[in-house]
Length: 114
Image 1 (cartoon, rainbow, N blue to C red):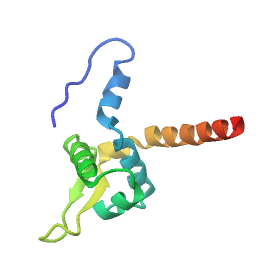
Image 2 (cartoon, one colour; image 1 turned 60 degrees about the vertical axis):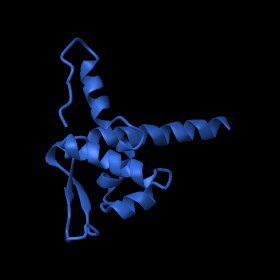
Image 3 (cartoon, one colour; image 1 turned 45 degrees about the horizontal axis):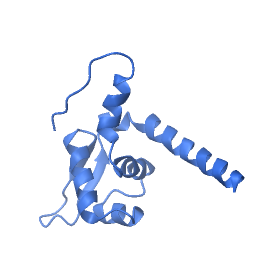
Image 4 (cartoon, rainbow, N blue to C red; image 1 turned 90 degrees about the vertical axis):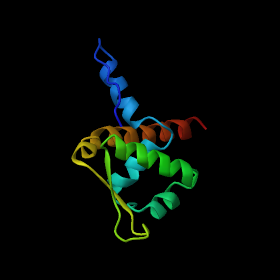
């Protein structure tokens, strides 16, 4: 997928990152791929119960088109399809790790207020 990248003043590099990982499920998909607990469509579907299969397929296709993940089809009928991070996708590890850490911090803050 050819995306328009922004070449402007401060803040635009953040926009480029957000454009690549935006969408309700892309960062969650990446989180599970980094954890290594879900590489097949079916395991991602189970790991993210709130996402529809159609939306999961769309988000995976967009991540693949942007060069963030690879899709490997292992047999003729497509049942052994696996997803993995590309070298470019692996560079998002600090971003996803920071998002996960902040999410945990936020949960503890909210629990303390309750």
